[in-house]
Structures are given as C-alpha cells and as structure tokens.
Image (cartoon, rainbow, N blue to C red):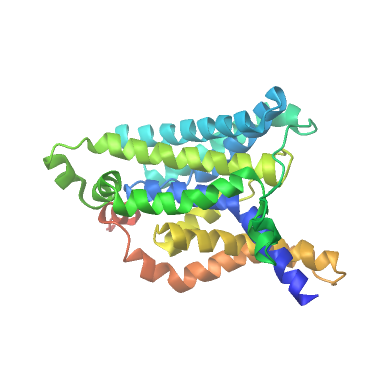
Length: 307
C-alpha cells in the first residue's frame, strides 16, 4: 500500500512538475542574463491556450506545442523590449505581462473551455517501462515529459560549458566588460529572455495538452510564480531546478493519491500545501541565494534609500 502510494506520487511528481520544469529552466536563462521575468506565469498561460487551441484546430498536439512556444516567446520578447529598450521596471513590467496574458486568454480562450482538443498521450517506452517502480515513474509519460529529460542536461551544458552560456552569464554579471570586448549585450539579453518565454510556453502547452487535457481560465494557477521561486532557491542550476519542480509536482500529486485511497483529508489544506512548501523553502534559503545572484540581477532588487 505504502509502496504503491509512493510510486503514484513520484509518477505524478514527474508529469505534474514538467510544466514548471520547462518554465523554471527558461527563467534560469533569463535571470542568468540579468533579467527577471515575473511574466513567466503569463508566458505559461498564453502557451497553454495557444497549445490547446491550435491542437484542437489542427488535430496535431505537436503543432499545438510549437504554437505554445511561439506565444510564450512573443510575450517574453515584449517584456524584454520594455525593460531593455524602454527601461521599464523589471518586476512591475513582469506583472503587467501577466495581466495582459490573463486578459488575452480570457478573451480568446472562452470558446475552447468546453471544446475537445488533440491531446498528447502517454508512451510506454519498450523495455524501460517494465523496470520495477522506475519504469512506472519515468517511462510511462507524455512526449513533452520525455523531452524535458533531455532539456535538463542540455541546459546545463549551454549555461556552464558553452561559449554562448559564458556570454549569458557574463552579461548578467558585468555587461560593461562584455561590451568592451565587442559583444552585443542587448542581443544576448533579448535572446535569453525570449528563450525563457519559449520554454515557459512549452510548459504551458504541456499543462493543457498532456497533463490536464483541457483548457480553462487561469489554468496555470500560479505555476509560473512557483517556477520563479524554484529558480531562486536552485540558484539557476538546471539539475537543482529539476528537483524543485518535481518537489512541487509531488505535493500536487499527494492529495488525489490519498483521496483515491479513502483518506479523510481537508482538501483546502492539501491544495495550499504546495505553495506553503515553496514559501517555506524560500524563507530558509532565500537570504543565502540572494547573495549568489549575478551582480546585474542584484541591482534589480535594490531599493534606493529615501529621505
């Protein structure tokens, strides 16, 4: 009994945490380049609607996932232009992007609330899916979840082993130095922010077409903010980000798993538990992680003294 519960929760952690994983990896790129994007929630939201709507219209969830990526990237690019070219406040502008996404998805998503789409289905990988416990947890999932397994090591390599990653981290630390050597600082930041939005959009598409198999207003329910929080306590490290995303996914999966077994639980308490968990981790690790932020990112959170 306990064994089956653990496997069910672990499996739910992977599939349920994948949308947050995509968004958090994307935000890791953006923050490494010195740009905070609280509009990650908005990119996930437009990605969820675009993914579901285009999959419904074309009958192809892969086309839907591409549409989700494009929608999330477009919103992030707008955020990048406003904060980099127009010098808008990064934190306030991120919230503006979220409200813009809420308005757009409420307007254009109403007709898709009760409309069926073409969802991603779970693929059991031959051989690997037969491995006791691990097969059920990792290898009976949707295609976007499998792609996320590749995304994590690839993101680590890009950020910490490639010349492109060196530029991203360099512009986040001291963009003046990077500019001195002739690199296009704004281009690097735009690329990082847009890539972050693309990944968040894919995360939103995974949520609607592979995890929830539905669309409803504000379906991300704070997952983009959770992704931003995960990035903070994981210090933008892709493997640590993965652990944080799956931890949140496990908290989401625990409640229905217990209910299915007849446990008498307070539903509202379990609905709040994942978010309380994130807050607790931030309280414990927030101050330490703040000192590890890139220099360019620290300036975003500095408050000028008054009086």
